[in-house]
Length: 103
Image (cartoon, rainbow, N blue to C red; front, side, top):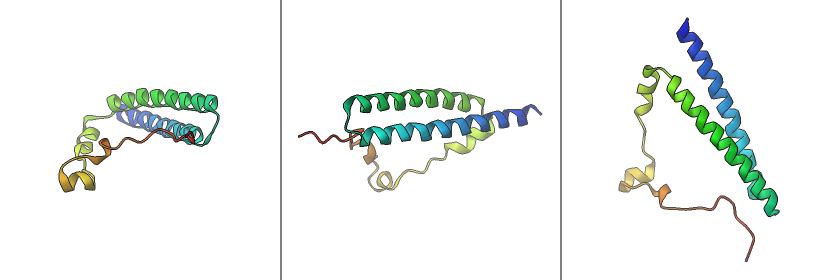
């Protein structure tokens, strides 16, 4: 019975995390599209706030999950670029969080 309760609890935490990730993405997208610097900063701070909430909740999810659940998540498939030359190209490229029209 305890195991079912834990699964239900973890399921609810995952749902909350998903909702917060959507909200964070929404704020980041709005920040990228706005031209007002103050509004952009406010939106980015709101997105950062949701990022911290997500990180905390994900830590709770990871610590609550059963050892059996964690054993299957260790099989990570590297992306195509890493398979070709052994390096991860995503770390080499730095894109700004948002693009301004300043010249």
